[in-house]
Length: 261
Image 1 (cartoon, rainbow, N blue to C red):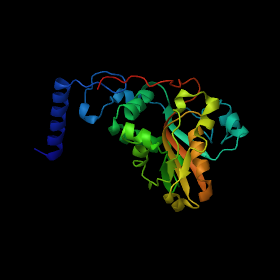
Image 2 (cartoon, rainbow, N blue to C red; image 1 turned 90 degrees about the vertical axis):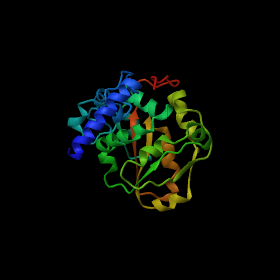
Image 3 (cartoon, one colour; image 1 turned 90 degrees about the horizontal axis):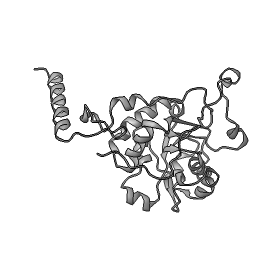
Image 4 (cartoon, one colour; image 1 turned 60 degrees about the vertical axis):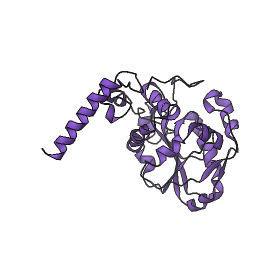
């Protein structure tokens, strides 16, 4: 028997055995997984994650009215035009809603770290214009107390799978309230001066870097990170996230209970 055929049969057997013995549910929709060995999320849920529909703001990535696609090739939204941004361009896989929201929750709060690989693959595919030409990625850090309680930094897990050198150029110098628990007007104040450069930041002089995080709501955290690196005289700061709160997408006020493992 050829090796590929044998491997396929063993995988099929393992799928059937796990389905019978454990009946694991999809981390996003909860339905029993037909192919558990392929990961904790079913194919239908991955396929349901749609990209943000162009045109989008060239700065923050929020969707724009469609007429801007004709009138201005690289348009920006009113909020980005009103304020000076340190992050020049930001992109996300999709809106923080539906299956993507559930997947991010399973990854971040339920410790399903195997989801970092497929999430990062989507980030590479849908954020290629941000990653192209960049010199390094910088994960948004967690405060030491939060990292101890969670056991890992989700941004770091994503950054290591984006195909660029990872420079841990930032540290969080004070604990902050969870951004999702705050109204938009208070988020910039909440993270002001919460980050500081590490000794590795010296490696980024005149470089193009991409900040990496799991979710962007107002972009306050990404902007605070970019400001803390200004002394490094970077050439450009971009950002990429797994999801972005846009339009009427819900902003969670508390952690939702995940589906049963």
